[in-house]
Image 1 (tube, rainbow, N blue to C red):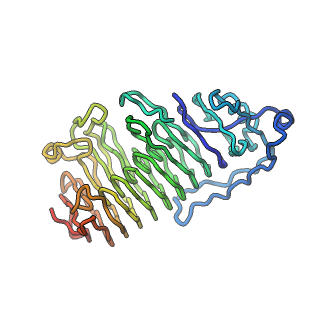
Image 2: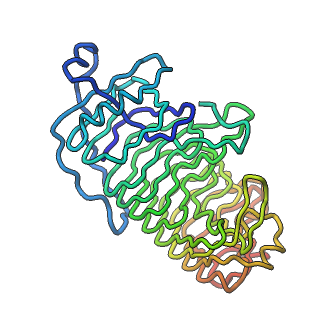
Image 3: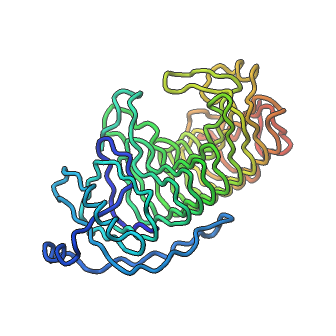
Length: 398
């Protein structure tokens, strides 16, 4: 699967994956004589310089083309056009979006039937935080594919949600959207991975207000590289352990060559405490089981971030005593932070990072090397707790 350059605009209540449409080719060309007939070339997307154990396989050649119509009024739902084109070109075709044309997707699109197809190419944030908001682009159950050269703007919720998928590469994606009102743009993660493996996310720009990338439960064998993240909550493992009795696993994660600016965190691992608790009406949980292991953050440039590195097993809870009294049931092991450079914000000055486990028995083998990050006042202090400080080449002060 491949997506070519177009702009996807989130409107209303769409759980969207964003795609295009066709009338019969001759009819469409007659109605749009000025439209260019040049079909975009299929990008040769490769996972580089790093690759997961199982990258996407090569896709068969395409043998027909379907052009996408639009109502062109910026209001009318183009989803029926989109589905027509996809059905016509599924299993061996190339769907083309007209360059410079806006497509309105106002209806959820179920695209679980896709096979061997190329798809080319809101300040509506909730006043009430409990209102469920749609995800802009969902990749559900895709096995071996690539998605590249998309503009995703103003999503009401996650920009990308990847679930039950394997061997998928996302490359050259541009994401942007901040609230222009008093309504906070909450949970606008760039990517969330869930029950997926062999995922690569690379060479993209993300301007958002929540996690740049978040590895949700049962995300394994994932490479994230070459991202420019701005305004985010960092590249995060978790949150994990939110639901009592559930087992969450995140392992074999490699994060490489990241630029992180104006963010709450650079690298972040967030785990809930060992018993259910509530910080707020929309942030509550704890008591889950599982493990985080073999996670590497390698080469990150940070600018105006609150913490360059944050590891916590007290996520969603302001009562630190409770976290130590009921340590997390989810273990953290074999974690590597390498080659961080830059400056933090003034928020926690003189502290530039925190590595805090709720018990020595649930954390081990956490390493930090070549961490050259300073606060605005020139300090480089870390808060460290229940970890082996001999493995941390940072200035642990507490």
